[in-house]
Structure formats: C-alpha cells, structure tokens
Image 1 (tube, rainbow, N blue to C red):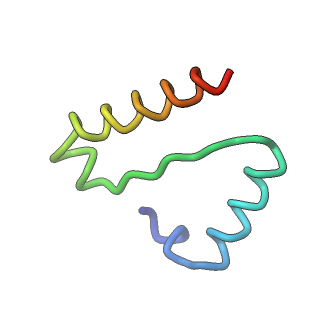
Image 2: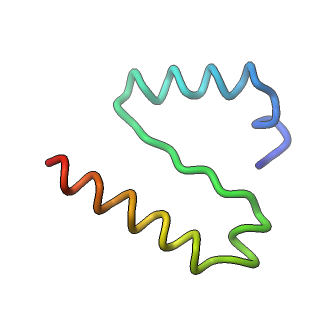
Length: 55
C-alpha cells in the first residue's frame, strides 16, 4: 500500500466514495504483485467470475 493508504481515515473516506459510485477495489501490496503475481491474478479472476455469476 502507498503511504497515504496506511491511514485509516483515508481508507474509510475512499471506501465511502467507492460505495457511492458502485465501485469495488482490490488492493495488493507491492510485494504480493512482485513475488506472487500468480496468486494476485487468481484473486482477480475469481472476483471477476463472482461478478459475472451475480449478473
């Protein structure tokens, strides 16, 4: 996570904005992306499949 997103207040504010806009956000830290990209991709794929099932 970036420096600003470590602050709970910023996270809460972001979540409220996203919810109002109907957005979903997945967060991955740099280490996950750099060292475990396969799992990151699996999580993203699973999320997309869940969304497709709901529609």
